[in-house]
Image (cartoon, rainbow, N blue to C red; front, top):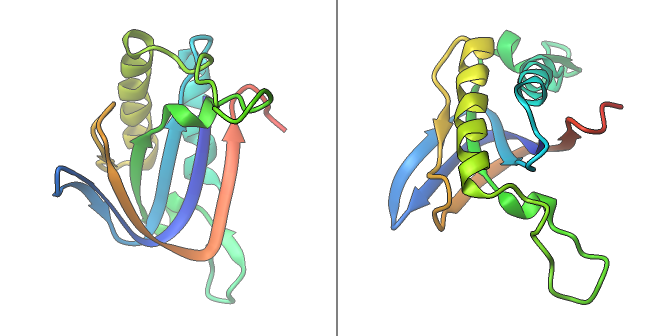
Length: 150
């Protein structure tokens, strides 16, 4: 499971010009899933995201987590995070999980994140053509992969 996480002042996602999810201060999370991902991967990733100390404390030092900051989260499914780009100029998405595997894991991840954060998570629509708007704060952007737990 791979996530690109952006600290945002605000973010929203629209489908067919209708806002499906929006947040103020918090994290925009793009989530990519592979067939090998398990419940262990999503539990680890959720806890990691909720507890990352990437929000400023009262001294302006990144020392607070999303949970401590009482921030919000917006999760967007994104199979392109597992693109292979070694050969040619057309990315291959063969490593990304098919919907029958990805959708249940995506839904479980959202439930786990809600549980770990203690609040409702905003989302887009799995598989839809989405327009994502954000105001990156910092900018702070991190990539986390549950298969590479450095």
